[in-house]
Amino acid sequence: MTEKCILQLDEISAGFNTKAVVEGVSFKVKGGTIAAIAGGNGAGKSTLLKTIARLIPVLKGKISIDASDLSALPLCVLSKKIAYVPQDLSSSRDLSVEEMIAMGRNPHQKWWQWRSDQNDKLALENAIKATELDDLRHKAVSEISGGEKQRTAIAMSLAQEPELLLLDEPTAHLDFKHQKSLMQLLMRLKSEGMTIITCLHDLNFISEVCDQVVCLKKTVRAPSSQLFAGPPREVLTRENLQSAFETDLRIIRDSTDPDSKSIFFGL
Image (cartoon, rainbow, N blue to C red; front, top):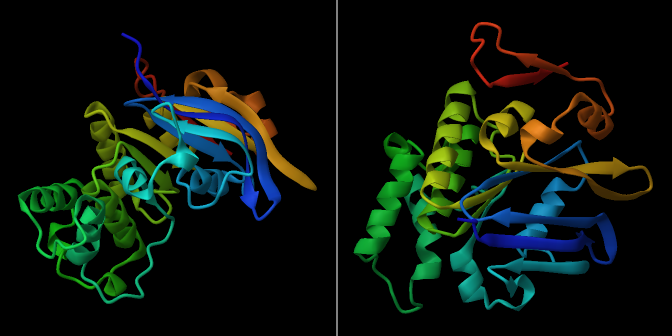
């Protein structure tokens, strides 16, 4: 059985005002898979992800979600389909972790609804459990660490119960323990049918978790462009990575486990 294509980009140019940061991007994402947007600093990864989230308008091309034009979807429909997690969670409002996560339920509530129903409570508890935040649920967001804020932002998006989860550099503030927990969480969400697109620098994470990777190439005095796309084991070659990051990378196999398919990338 062929998986349904949930998201499709056709010759997308993305940027701010009328200035393109990245152009000519085309790829499809099947439902229940994990896709990574990779590339060097300044290549336009976050800009492209924000365009998919409809936080900034498409400059050229078309984005379709479930075969519908993304730009034409009513906001109330869009907010139930897509959840976006930024690199940094704003803590200007003095909310507790639990209160912040509960905000993810807003798209499912009527404007006159002032009390959470059973579905809201269940979604909230599932999100807190999945991100291991029970011990922090009553602490103020302004008082927790960067990694804990990142997990809170992910939990808020999970409480939203979206079809498509967009994560901007989710490993940026996480230690090794919580990187592994995030890896396990994304794999579980995928097994439950969620589709995930994430911007990542971490090639090891991409290799272990993602079904496909789309790499952007920064160009001097011109918008970035799509360099390659495909399954990580096919496209993360030394030649491709050298072109993408303009440095030579080593690809190392785990010598302690000859049967392991794990590979590691390093300088």
